[in-house]
Amino acid sequence: MESSKFVAIIVGSRSDLEVVQKAADLLGKLGVANELRVISAHRAPDLLDRYVMDALTRGATVFICAAGLAAHLPGVVASKTTLPVIGLPMPGQVGGGLDALLSIVQMPKAVPVATVGIGQAENAALLAAQMLGLSDSGIAKAVADHRAEARRQIEEDATNQ
Ligand code: RP5
Image 1: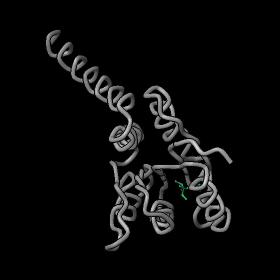
Image 2: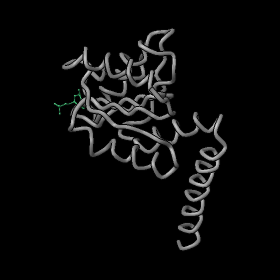
Image 3: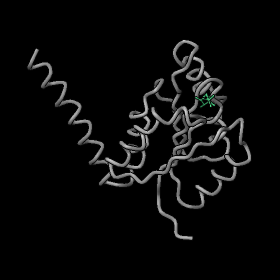
């Protein structure tokens, strides 16, 4: 099977999609191939295992895993690969997602998950793109352009205050 690099985005529930779609959209804008799947680590563990193994054979290079509540999905995926896993905590009912943030960030030693802020789907996408940009100058330039645009907007707002 032909292998081409992509970012694999996994979410624990359809209810996460509205937030996480922003990560897929930004990756697309940055020219980063990606695919998005809904697979719960708790409710479909065997399917998750099959998907991760298959994604690795097809060229997944970074995983973005979004989950809420007990939020074990990123850690479980990190346990199956030494490729980078970015954890994206979903906003929830306990402390606005603090439960998921702590669950995702508090990994035991030897199995890290790079965790972004609660609901910060675009930062998850940018972090993945920055990783891929280490070996792809086109992606690195797209990330730099995105940063420059963020700076330009802030400076423009400041000028108009
Ligand atoms: C987690 O539980 C999901 O990632 C979601 O954020 C949360 C609630 O899931 P649903 O009850 O909406 O399916 O597994």
